[in-house]
Length: 281
Length: 281
Image 1 (cartoon, chains in turn blue, red):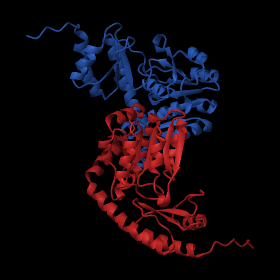
Image 2 (image 1 turned 135 degrees about the vertical axis):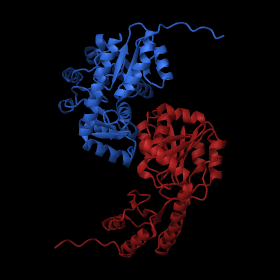
Image 3 (image 1 turned 90 degrees about the vertical axis):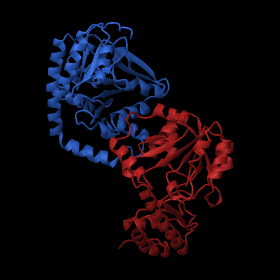
Image 4 (image 1 turned 180 degrees about the vertical axis):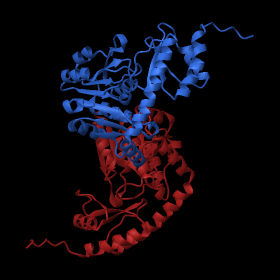
């Protein structure tokens, strides 16, 4: 196990340790956008495999690509959908000799996780974050679990003294209080279910989320105006202005009263047809 | 200006942003050992120029080398000696078009610094640390000053969210209280002068230090046994088992009572001849 200055730093270390110019890295799209940035820094060759129906991760394509580095964010972002651990087990087996990174930033919110694969496969690394389920985003703490030879490679590119003493103390205290985290997760999961149900009632498609956010979509409708309307009311949701995702919003799960405020603002925005604005007089 | 997770992270960013495989990086030796590590990670070609008499930095050789990246630690480690800013000004001028990094981790303890060169030269970056003069080593905070195009290159390789909110708050509060730092520095400088005088009286050569440590040397005498004797007494000093430095110790300046404890243990160790140990009965 190796602690990092946020799981983002651990991902950056993995890219630095694994990829030189022209080496291949494979992951599904859409997924966490940081992977593109890290691949560009390494001048690596990116192999992107589109997710399938219901955002299913293209496991067979990833296995056949046999990239030097394969990453699966699980649950994935922005869909929130989960790939079963048994399928990742098979992917790891097929990728033997190549590193498979499972980015479990949101795993505490899911019904299962793939941490046990680290014991079974020398080529699997699981990355965790204390920023989500432990609510310690401002502290910058992540964890990477992998066999010692993988960790040894990361240590070669690790910044010296990359963790503050305060982050280490806070992280140790947080991990000692996993009960707090589980209560936090239960709250988020309850609110997530209620949010999904309400969004579906409003006409959104919502893939079943196993994360602390949901993806709400109305096929073919550009969500830009709705995202801007929410922003004007001080409500920040994620809008992706890409062909694949412009008809969807990623909505983080807040407290029940925050979600109530979201729906108060969202309803009239969804009901309103997008009209061209009148010219100002 | 760019803040980093310690000045070490800023140096790592500079290496990542500047050097590809085979690119040249030049610095004097001996100096801060991290530069070797960072160069190895980038697979860069290192041009090392030995310091001269009295640990003078070989400015002309560095200028003529015109490496892609040149680094001068000033005051230098482990000698504590200072290169005048006027000489670095000339070096920057001669290196025009190539980046000159001045690592000023210890500059607050010196009579002058080279920060003003950043305004005059587009190719100069000055790196500072809050770990020494501000006593915030555990917080991991460093600063890099350079023209915007240099900072823009560093941002390209910066880890996302590399600073904790607590470090940012602590750093802002520390910089607001520069008066505390100056009083701290004055204490260290007074103790440093007393320490240098006392070491010289004991027979050590001590180059005039402008840092928060001194280098104490007895030409030709291996300091290994003395360093181990100090360690047994719970006093940690730096011993470098290299041909160039094995006859020297780098001693950090502590409180006056810590220095008194050092000298109590050091004196008998220095007086004792290094005798082969008797075989145990």
